[in-house]
Length: 83
Image 1 (cartoon, one colour):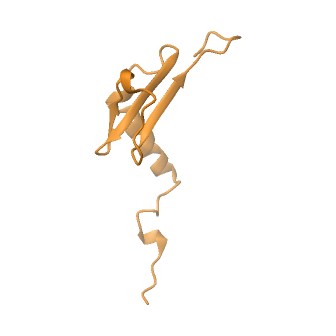
Image 2: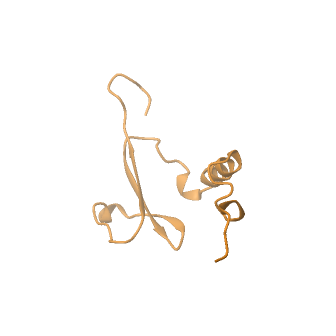
Image 3: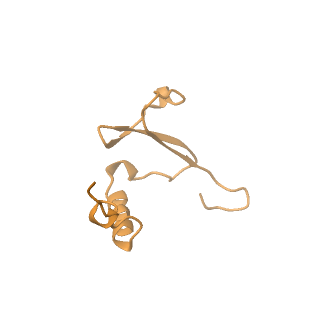
């Protein structure tokens, strides 16, 4: 049987500084993240065809089996002014 080396796969850079930088830049350029976390509350997004899509507030609490969601709970500590 043919031997495979993980270093020749798409996992070769997994966990590297390069991978971390690519993820950081990707997250910073995601349009869905503009203005988030500015006030206390819950925000939900659903992943649709590999894109981040805002989930309607009227559907908060409804999740579909097999789908992926991102849930952000922004809150303020009682002893702090920061969110």
